[in-house]
Length: 92
Image (cartoon, rainbow, N blue to C red):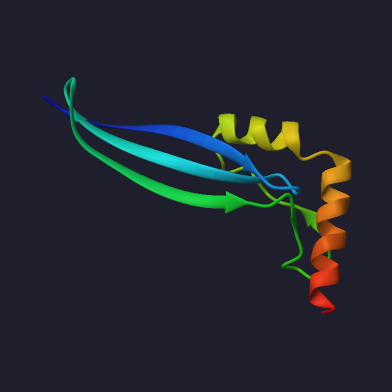
């Protein structure tokens, strides 16, 4: 049998600023039999200021189900609240 690799994604929306926790499951199969299952987790925030100014977080590399969750919960109000919160934290 041939080895195949499959991916599954779980998302959880957390907190006031709708941070999206992503769990990516990588499943290795030999035919129909699962031989390995590993997990990787990461968190996505609605806005990014790594280039010095606020911008929407680039989610283009995420799975389509993760993108759909982010697009549903990251409203303009959520983004504004996140920016205000983070800017206030920087001034403390």
